[in-house]
Amino acid sequence: MMPYPIDLGEFLTYRVSIPMQYRENSYTVPLVKKNKLAGLLLRYDSRSQLLDAIPGPVITHFLKDAENQNYRGFPTAGFSFFPTRDPALREFAEEQGKNAGGVYVTNVEPGTPAMKAGLQVGDIVTAVANNEIDQNGNYVDPLYGKIEFTNLLTAHAYAGDVVPFRVQRNGKPMQLNVTLEHRDTKDYVSPPYNLDQPPRYYVLGGLIFQELSRQYLKEWGPNWQREAPQRLVYLDHFQSELFPDKNRRVVILSQVLPANSTVGYDELAYLTVTKVNGKEIKSLDDLAEAVKHPIEGFIKVETEEDPKQIELDAAQVAAEAQDLQDNYGISALHRLN
Image 1 (cartoon, rainbow, N blue to C red):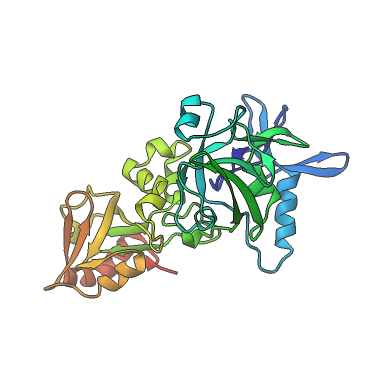
Image 2: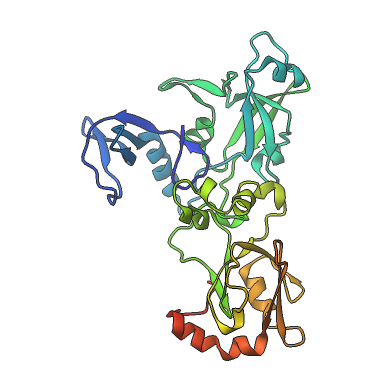
């Protein structure tokens, strides 16, 4: 079980040690066994000669789901967990049984299938879909042997399936029936991926505003979790806890283009926008509407971080908009669709 490029949990992955010629710009390469497709190349490390591949069961899952006109995507349950190898943790959770196994639930995201089914932090999930889970979070798969139980929720189950969870809560056994759902990108505060859509932005007098997304953070490269601005990484990682209502985006001032309107603000970057002209900002659409209503001739932008407040002359911003566009070769000062 390994993460795929879209960073949505972990999926079944084949790992093969093999020397091969592979160009980084190749999209994928099929893996064939006995004239049948066994997998698709996901990534290849030429130094270690290790190849990761999307296996046949995951491809079959996608194709079967795609046969329906209303493709829903891979399902999720919406909870985090921790192994129960530590006997002190099992004692703390009041787990019963000599050969007790399972995983300790550390977080349940609001509005997810797990929360709707009644799963709680502190529960121990001992079995999923009638498959016993050991202290490492593994079950015995008839084909692959011991493998993480999340494979039961991704490669085996589909959105809409009802999966029984056996749980211990304060030492008492119970069963919860979890109806799996696919979580669409619109349900995230910081979307984990963006397919075939250009990034949204709004340029105001040289200030460039964008919405936080995982794709934006990945501009810092493969080590983005360490290299990207840590406050933005924090907002992305803990978005469910920080924004339980979910119905919003995080708008950031990503950078500043030198212009007459932005003198003194040139060094500002990666600031979280909270209000514009007194209106709370939960998306670029909110910002676009708020800038239409300056206060006493000024556009007032409030940020979570220093300098806390930025003020632009509304008349100057409007007068210099075309020059700004021409000087920097910007085809449009905003893209909201």
